[in-house]
Length: 209
Image 1 (cartoon, rainbow, N blue to C red):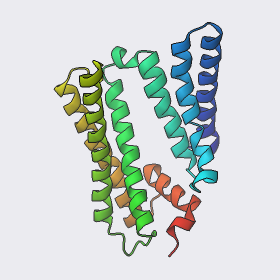
Image 2: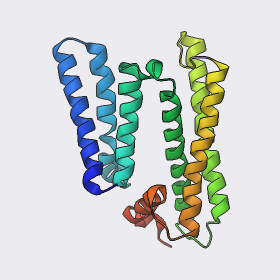
Image 3: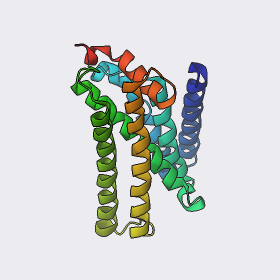
């Protein structure tokens, strides 16, 4: 995806959220305003990270985060996509697992200072997979806790929903961790592998020997 295409998607997402916040606030729809405001604010966080913690996210990460938040908080919750489309929750679970898998790869590379000689591809991939799946398990525990303590319906169909979410999480984690394996064993830098490469380039100080 080219630079202009990425930021066109990002700006369109922002414009949609800003318009929703303004219209709902003007018409007194406080719940809609609050729901749209959260993803709008969260998509600004990556642009504050360089000054706060010195981390620069690649364009692809930022656009992916914006689209994910739009899909979960705005479309999923407010527009009712979770109820209208049976596959919506599964798609978002898969996307989040891919992102967490990539995060696991990057964390391991940071620990090893980016030394490819020390970074055994299989070990890095297994760590990334376990990291992503563990995060998915924690989320399922959170959903269960919310349902039990506050009478919510985050698990939808109960055990079946939880198990399918975990299966999808595993599939997404495999994709993210596989990208780390390819990054360490080949010169190919397309797709998910390109996101890892871009992160390393933008944050080279974390990977210096």
